[in-house]
Structures are given as structure tokens and as C-alpha cells.
Length: 299
Length: 267
Image (cartoon, rainbow over all chains, first blue to last red):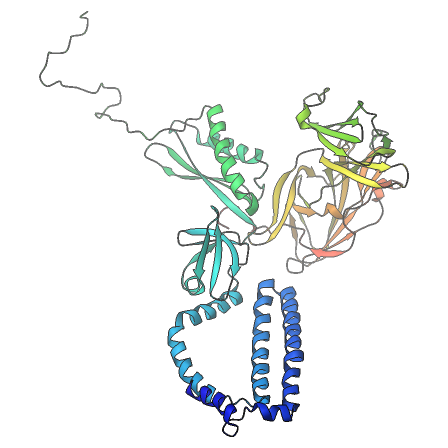
């Protein structure tokens, strides 16, 4: 910073610094070149970056095009700025010296930001998700609004905006819910032990066939999950387009209940049956204290 | 191929639009279509009948109608059959193996959709009011778990033999010529028919689509598909009444199911 101030002050004394206003007025060549760099160079830089952004955006994704466009524009702008300063005689040497010290300080302070930027590049290259995808990160689920330099923005389904640093996404496990075009809906179904498994299976498959959003293939499947405490458990799995997943999940659950009820197939409550060791013998009860129970046949 | 009987006449094509207050009723297979006229408007409603049921004679309630308002010029209606707008997945009546260098001809009945158009008498400008399937077709997925396309599941089976009982008012007879040009046997358990590239022809009241020739070159190379621009030889002399939705061309695509791709559970 001291070096930069010294350079500026030199212009007032004419002799110490390179930047001399009077000299520039006498010989306007450098000034004209500087003006040319600004008024021609900057529009050219902007046009080149726009073309690159458009080309890459068509070839890959619009977001990649945006990033590459910026990567092209800012170095050109920086080169132009250095060239303009060089033309008008502004010495960058002291500035670079100060910048070196400043850079070290900034480097320590911006570790996280730099990590996020680099993580952002990795996310763009790997493409685990794109704008519009729905992802689960920890306990947050939302649609990807944007993939920015430092973070990814999600919109949750109750319309909140969640900002997740890129570094977090590179380190953590997350799930892309909408990566593939079809998804499976799993419905746990439990029926009473007395029910016919084959009949239950046929009824469930019929429910799937009747649902207009359930795909015929991959075929719906009824998988026997096990002997539960109160019921025989199945997992009824059907496939749907990802756009219809929620509609299928809601509708198929209701339709299963309705159909099982109409077929007289019991969906039992959790219950416990107590036996003394024999199903047919009455459960013995002894009353402590109080009047004795009435014998059978008494009025 | 002569089915031995003639199909319905005057079902497809141009017809006068209903006058205001007048309702026309059309029965096309299991589909019943009502077209009602109003001042500057056309109303449409439909109902489908399950097998064995009698078609409804009365139109549905007010809320089940669709209304179109248009420029009040002299016009008439055009009723056309169309094919579904997605590929159809069909299972042959009995799966078979096509030996290498062998060929087979499969006949499939495709339920038509009914398109209702309004055509201006002066100038002939056409406005499509809507398309209604004569039969409801279930959605299915043609592809694998990571990529593919949405298709319709065709409940009617593919047949190797053309018999008179296959012909029906609302069915378009589609012919597939399979040629196994690979060095492997081809197990045909189901296949996808790209009906969006097919036109519809009419002969003696029955509907036909042009022949689709599928040249199978092996699992890695896929299939080459060619669609003719004329009716199949079984319907020689038929006239085109509905052009294809998509431009006809030859292309390579996936026609036969990857037998292990969709195991349905955990695959």
C-alpha cells in the first residue's frame, strides 16, 4: 500500500513516478491507446465471453456455459486493465509487492471460499445433479435452483430456500431423487394370518393394473416380507414415471385399502393374543379378596 | 386378404357440423362420441364401454363436456382415425424364437384414436379439437432402469396368422416383417412398434397401417427399421386417410426387449 501511495504522489512532483499527467497531455499516444483498449477491448472481451457461453451452453448445459463465459471474460478484462495501466505509465511493481503480502493474508482468510469454488468445479464436472433435480442432503430435500460458485441453492417443497456450500456436497453423501426417469413406489401391506396369500397377491396386482399411472413394465411385484407380530407382511412395489411418483404413492395406498376392504381381506390392528397353553381352555382368573364369584346357574 | 365382410361405411371423413342444439352420436368400437352444436361453439363428450356392456344412449352430464369456441364461419367436421402418439409395446400371442437368417410376419391390432377436426368451408383451414383413444391403454416403460421412453402397453396379442376375426371397427391392422440378419437366434417375447411414423389406410371399411420392416442385426447393433409409403400387400389398393404423425424415415433403434433389463425387482 505504501508503494502505491508513493507512486500516486510522484505525479504531483513530476520526476519520481512514471505516471505524469502533464507528460500524457503533451503526448496523447499512450492515452489514446489506453482508451482504445478500454472502448474496443472490453466490448470484444464481452462478445467473446458471450459466444463461448452460448457455444458451451449448447454443447453441454447452460450453467456450464455461464461458468466458462465468466472464466473467459475476467482474465481478458484483467489483462486489459493491466495493459491500460501500463500505457498510462502506472507502475504495478509496488502494487504487486503489496499484493503479495495481501495475497498471503487473503489466502488464509479465504480457505473455505476457495475450497467451495474448487468443489463447485468438481460438481460441474462430475454432474451428480443438475438444475431442476430433486436431491436429499441430510434432512433437507429440495429442487436444485442453481449451482453457483460457492454453493448450491435448493427450494424445499414447503418453499424455503436452503443454501448448501459446495464443499459440503463434495464431502457428504446425497441422493438424487430424480436422476432416472422411473421410480419405484413401495407400499407395505399387512394382512391377517387367516388370509389366503395367493388371493392377496392377485388383488394387489389387480389394483396396480387398474391404476392409470402405474407402469405395466417394470412389472408390479408383491414380495412376501415376513411373518409379523400381528400380520403377514408384504411389500407391494409398483413403478411410475418420476413425474407421477407422488400421485401414484398417494393413490395406490388408498386404492389398496379400499380394495382389501371390499374383498373382505382383513388389515389387522397390532394385537397380542394370550393363551394359557391351550387355545380351547378358558383362561383361569382368581379374584383376591371381595365376595366370591357367583356359581354357574345362580340367578 | 379379404376378411369376408365389409367394415362400416361413412364412419370416417367429412360430415356436416351439428346445428345449434343438435347432437350427433358416433359409435366406434367401445367408444361413444357425442358432438353437440352451439352458436359459434362445438361441444364434445365421450364414454367408453367395457366388453359385454351396451353402449350408452344418452350423453353425459353437462360437466363432462369439452367446449370449443371458434371463429363464426361456415364449417364442417372431419372425423379421422389416428394412431397413438407413443410407441406400442406388444407381446406376441406365444413368444417365439426367430432363428438366425430367418424371417417372420406378425399382425397386430392397434386400437385407433379418434380425431375430431373443424374444417372451414372457405379455405379449408383445419383446427383439431381433440383426440380420444377408443380404448384406454396402460402406460409402460420401454428401456432400462436408467434410460428409455414412455410407451403404451398393447393388450391385444400379436398374431402370426391373419384371420377374419381380427378385424374390428376401431382396430388398425398393423403388419411387422421381422428379418433376423444376425448370426444369433432372436427370442421374441415382446417388441416396440413405432406407430407415430405410420399412416392409416382404409379398404372396404377396415383400417390398415403400412408395413414395418425390422432388420435385426444383433444385440449390439440394434435393429434397422423401414416403413413403407404404401399399404401392406394384404390391403393392396387401400387409400390413405390419415398421414403419419412423424416424418417417415429409416432409423436404427431398440425394438426388441432386453430380456434381462427389466427384471422388475432390484434389477
